[in-house]
Image (cartoon, rainbow, N blue to C red; front, top):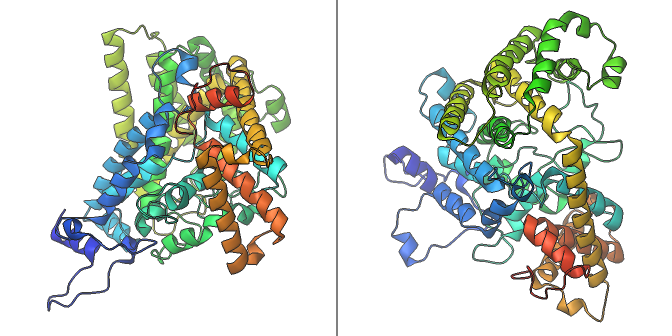
Length: 529
């Protein structure tokens, strides 16, 4: 790190030797006093944050949390949340280094917008999936529903908000109540959706609505959000260091992390599905070939008819094209979409998928070369904009890369995620989450036995109770009620949700069997709970 960067991280000094105002981006929630050893050591603050995240048990836990398909269900080594996060970090760092080292017009704009420190980006990428519960996205949806229905938590559960809660509250470094006590820069860089769930009301979900802010259904708030009301002060404090960033926009470093997540998700899941032989080349080819051949006729087909026959070859891609045009007119282009369909058809469908994966060294080499080429191209398709569209960010993919990622995601969603056999498996996993929440709620209501509940569960309920009381005393208008009994119910629910979300897939299965009496092994999976 050069002298200028080190000065920015520690607080710089003017030529006369008088300390200048410290960079607000390196400020922590709670100021830290360095011990004698730390005071004499080189201690760049963002590197400290990165190491705190990497050494966190929440980070280690990701090695046993499903990405899309579970390792046990697929029968081979597939990506989990940890390997995904590691690869997102690598992609994000490459983009950040390029932007940070750009001394032309693009680099000047990045610096005007608050900068793009590669270590901040790495830290955010490492942390971005910490809040994912067991069993992937269906686990997230199940926890969200249970939080609302069983405990009356209007904010439910959201993986991004859970990540921020872990960093700022649940995962403690060396003092109670301040989480990992990260710098503002890193906290801001994980805020992909810098608002609370309640702020999703009143938005149409169309082209004038920021990504993720449209409600699921009326009265349910934002589809995606990055902070619960309990953690709102920490979010506002982090964002305070970036006055040049509009209220609902990501910081530059957050945008880079978000793009890297999209790139990794679109390609590394394709890697998994190809290895697991889950992509039927004939079916995929029919979809792409039919859309390209009947493009004009499909464009004239009524929307309702497309939905009714969505599994008919070509219809899925046409629905995707229309969705992009309706929601993202700032970048969606019919010609660019057609070029991406042709490119994916040529290189993925008729290229990669035409030769079944056989586990040979030659197959691994071919797959590695394919992935490296696509990642390199997407990494170099970065655009920086001073005044981005409301649905974009200051850093975004160019039109060609944007459409490529959308088509790659469609391929996986249409031909893997909608498979009935996967749906059956996931429904079973959702029932595990429901058993856990139901059992823990009953346990905490049992006055005679509540003291024997898992210590961490009791701690998390107590933390949530403290948080609700703090909000009640400081900003009671943010709560649906200040009734003590209702707040106790909310705290119990939030604590249970925090606890269940922190389990690995295997722990969730094992503990669900234990608390429901389905297991006869007394010490089966209960360590550290």
